[in-house]
Image 1 (cartoon, rainbow, N blue to C red):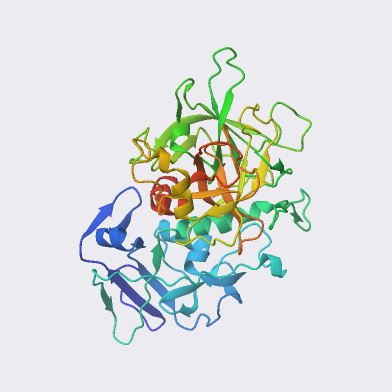
Image 2 (image 1 turned 120 degrees about the horizontal axis):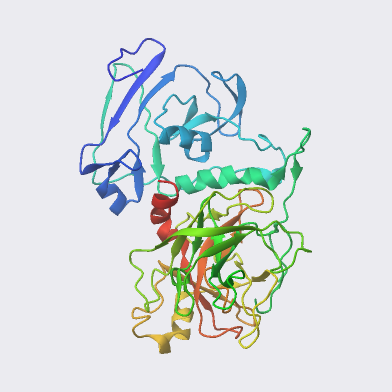
Length: 447
């Protein structure tokens, strides 16, 4: 149906039009409200939706039937349905509606290639329950046919990240060549029993881990792996801004993902090597300042995703659960004066509050840390009593937590930025807080 079509008795016609302070973004082909982006971090997609009356009144989690394909689907909030997100990005608005949760649409979500409906309680995906903030400075105009009801599909900043997280979960499974039941390959663990003071990571435990490499001045065939990173899509790795260019080895040139122990083929790993074709530092990262220490590298080709290589989720929650224990991973030094580890290591840490963190770094206040530790863009983690920490060579790698509601996925909450020393009790390391940069990341990785 087009704007000029007359709605018949089986359809609703919705025209949701934002008229105040709007501009057209040709790259993403969306109408975006400036005030909304600045004040509420909300993206409103202006949509023309044609929906049939009485398709279903199912609620979240119930089975529905996608009539156009005659396949079973599951009723989900629109922002939890990767197929719906993709359809909206392609301007396909004929979404099948199950019902509503307040102003939010519940759609009949098309299953992906992973086992579509796993009944185990450990794999249940909980809907996002965070209230959707409504902009206070923008008044939308909604034009509808008489007696029609209206539907506004609202995508917040972070909804693309959430949808991709759910999409990448399918690679937890391997699929027999001749068909049959998919095999659960999950090796991630919640509540690790506890890189300095760390332990060896297992195969497939951190399939998003990446190595950032630089040209070796003495051996061009053997890169210098000096930083870490996290695969967040088929084409992009998230890392620290200071890892994009090394003072000695110049620009980062290579990425390796899927590895476990460097320089051996006897580990249970499936490494993939890439050339970096683009380095993107945050526009407000100005070294030697430590603020906004975040960057992206674009790979020369898409990564092949499987149980060994799988993107991580990104933290889209405005608050940190201080009762959880984040995990740092990397191939960095195992001590202040020790060599780098050839094996991927993991260490369970504790969060430090801002006051304690600032006390630890008050002597560093200067050109690199003029405002002290800024809690909206930085966070601190270490050990209050033990010698557990990230160290040199772990820079750019993730600080992550086991996802509470997406099976076998880790969520990146921070990026290893800098520290005062390695493995000293009660002296935390500093990490760039990912949540503050979600809008910037999404604009590049999923425009």
